[in-house]
Length: 146
Image (cartoon, rainbow, N blue to C red; front, side, top):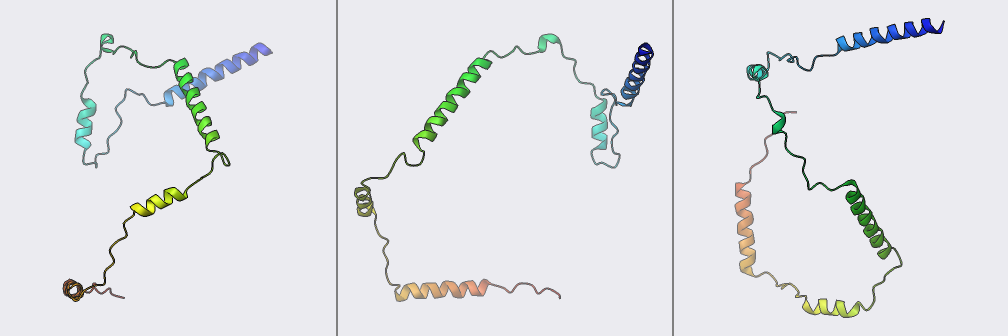
């Protein structure tokens, strides 16, 4: 009885594998090109053009400057340790500002206030001339039908 089950199972696997393999598209077959595409001719000619055959001797050598897994593991551990140290050093209640008045006084001495002057008649005339010129260049937006 078990032998028959194995035969049926084996037959089912073979038939299923064969059906699946035939249903898969061949990777070596050229895909159809949409003829309405503006680049259809270029795509078709590029698909038919054979490229150069590569030799095994043309495969580049394996780079020697790639770090090993142990070197990467060590670098990651160092970065995590540095991150943990920064987190501990900047945690709440680990530092406070002290004696800030001298810093603030120095900043106040070095700061130069902007020169606020009342506008003169010339300034007002220039502003009005600019506004008049801007109004002259302006045009109403186009009306939209409603």
